[in-house]
Amino acid sequence: MTGSYPAMSDDAVRPQGVSPNTSDDPAELLPPLEPVQLLDDDGALHDVSGFPLDLKDADHRELYRYMVLSRRADKQSINLQRQGQLGVYASLLGQEAAQVGSAYALDAQDWAFPSYREMGAALVRGVPPEAILHTFRGTWLGDHDPHEHRFGLLSIPIGTQALHAAGFAMGAKFDGADLVVASYFGDGATSEGDAHEALNFAAVFEAPCVFLVQNNQYAISVPLSQQTKAPTIAHKAVGYGMPGYRCDGNDVLATYAVMRRAVDRARQGEGPALVEAVTYRMEAHTTADDPTRYRSDDELAEWQRRDPIARYQSFLEREGILDAATREEIDAEADALAHRLRENVYDAPHGDPRELFEHVYVHPPGTYAEQRALLDRELTSREGGDA
Image (cartoon, rainbow, N blue to C red):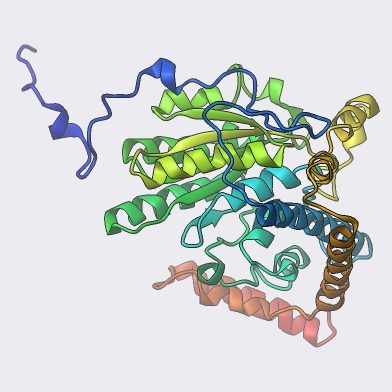
């Protein structure tokens, strides 16, 4: 067969509304191997070119407050699960700085799409923590209004929320909305096709989306070394044509500064970015996991030495930003939060499972009625005491 295809210009194949990205030198998209760190392990502050801080003393105290509240809510959540009040729970212990610092970099109109571990980010966005726990209890699929807090419902499937974030950001760009979307997922999700598709689409359409990967070293029991051969997760960004950033995820100031740079860039119409926050999950993957089977006590002890709250507290006290009275006030608020969690969650009634069928399809398929009838018979049997 002979002949040739007609020549096509770049504009002919480029999606409508997308401009050519001719200024991005691939070398400029690559991150340094060493993560950006503003606070060293002892809490001493160091300037890093390109990542200035715009935080006032009140902001510093708020960051510390959110981190302490997150940890206290996390501890109470584990207690509730052990008492049979939650079906399962995914701890954020050790990841408070990565979550709080990144969420604090968002503006009020921005959106966040979480995985199942983002209690800290949820608190920053104003989501009541008991609403998060009702998901883990099975009270219902979600118990907060995403539009009120601009915070999506928890996503249990690995990586699917990255697609939601990319699509939402693409839609916001088409609508001309002044907002940036943050997508939260872990290192394990980078092995999923959903995350790849989200990154690729967001890059092609130059969507205002920042993908925050909390690299906590393990996807359940699988270490990062068995997930990728890339030098770092942030290096994957160049394959999509977006910049990659790395930050010390146990340093709340570095996480905030790096995330803020990526958010500002997206807001200015320069497209998405991939931020890798290098951190560590100090608890089990979930309360159903036994981490002693795949990691050592020495490894855990090394990361405990880099505790994000202790590091930040050292900085704040050294700078005279945090005093004993403020610490006591925050600790008292954390205790009250834990009490509220218990009061709201303990023995909370479950919703009617039949409601599952009310919000899925506009035009249900033929098998839908059969499935609903099967559930109805099962529930009727149980309610009648026959099961």
